[in-house]
Image (tube, rainbow, N blue to C red; front, side, top):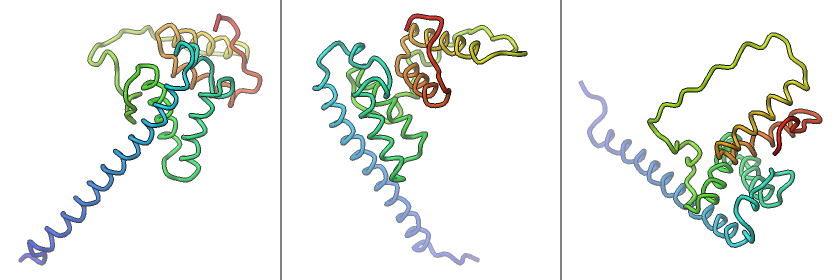
Length: 173
């Protein structure tokens, strides 16, 4: 015995299909609008990109403006905090590489499928705050040397916001 006719089931599927199409259109429109902002940032770039992007949201006005934009979307409840951070990263990746904004750029790997062997770090038995700052400073330098400038900037932002008195200590910035 079937309670739902084919018409009822079809209408339900059609309504969900309509929602999926509306979401896809909204995302396309959002990405286009973000690309306009990306174009404006590109036009405002009056020095080499590496120099223009140097620093973080506390020390670089351009980074602060992008952070404020996506933080505003988070505050309005349009996107989650993690999406806001992800979109900021994607924005700067697109800017740095001179490509169109895509919300998942920071999830795409340059060397997809390539397995990289990394040594394991040792066990931490006891430490101090100064040692933590040195370790984070080393991680920041490693990220920068690998060309992960956006990651390093986000990590530095987090350290400055979360760790009272944090300063990069042992390595050149």
